[in-house]
Length: 282
Ligand code: NAP
Image (cartoon, rainbow, N blue to C red):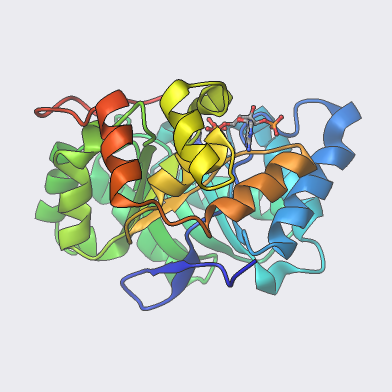
């Protein structure tokens, strides 16, 4: 296994191109140990960015993350998200405290607005400023923002200065953001975080072209789907895996370099979009 590839935040800080998701963790006490063990294994293998949210299992996923990072806090880059109704300055401060408690830490590395709601963006920016100032969070970002939302953010005073990333749906089946959103972010030197990179597991199933490409790399379809998401700089993928075997498999995807032939064959089966489409969300 090679060293984990990284991409860079505007501050120059690096992020591993493969992290770990946690949606649907923390829902069932009987599998908690397995979930904690999977995240710990992922950290050991270099997938040190962990994505969670106050929404997941009503805070249960953050608690699982808290258990997984206990004693290893400095090795991990913790990302969590708050609900849109909590996007005002006061409510963000309270939501952040609750998340910090569940995560068992004194700071969140990256705090994201989960999706856009009714709170004016300038209030949310003020909330982020306050949380950075008080060192509760290190970086701020958004999720599920389309280009028009990002443009609006950029028109506000210091709007886009504060926002280091946008977490969005991106995988072989969902390529709409290649049209405008990825170039928009790249031009501004901000990575995107790609969620559902294996389309909730669907891309791990038998697909003739994925299987053929996988065979050439002595890999699995899931590994090829992941290697494809992170094929260019500026994208971090956060597959969720509760099973140790999946965690190991996913880690190896970071070492696969797809060839021109692979990419052409994948383009034929999973064509890029031919125009602007509204951002797909989950
Ligand atoms: P995903 O990562 O594409 O897929 C997860 C599913 O794929 C799980 O059932 C997992 O199984 C399975 N899987 C993982 N690796 C596999 C492998 N190598 N082979 C076969 N199956 C594999 O979907 P996701 O959970 O929707 O997205 C990932 C993360 O993104 C989430 O967990 C969450 O943190 C984040 N997310 C964010 C948003 C947002 O609005 N910002 C929305 C959706 C998701 P096991 O668990 O059984 O191992």
